[in-house]
Length: 161
Image 1 (spheres, rainbow, N blue to C red):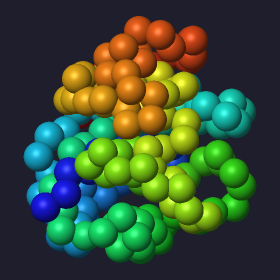
Image 2 (cartoon, rainbow, N blue to C red):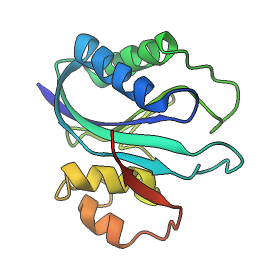
Image 3 (tube, rainbow, N blue to C red):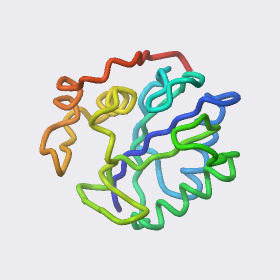
Image 4 (tube, rainbow, N blue to C red):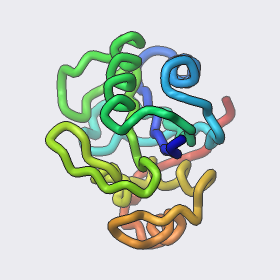
């Protein structure tokens, strides 16, 4: 079994429902959810002129390889209405692989650890809630250290489900 951390995000429609539905699909297709962060309302990152996001990080135990994990994630996104119209644009659901065990993968269509996770408050805050001591295999710093060193000043606030 592999341990993976996944970021869920949504800023179109009923975002909380899309995230909840994504977790149901992940448990059906990918593996067992071991931990879930709280939900966080966050300003958009990258392309700022869009609705705020709801984000959550989950820890999942899976038997899938990284490539198969990505395949199933893309299928779940499509099933939940994801349309890729614009880079960093608004979306019903976004599912990103943050870590896959301590593996480092750098392929054309799959980069793990996620290449932007260490510069995004909306990723590090929920991740630090469930895995503060997890070590980034390239940067060799814990998630909590990365959060402390972060320059990103976008608003990220815990919300009720």
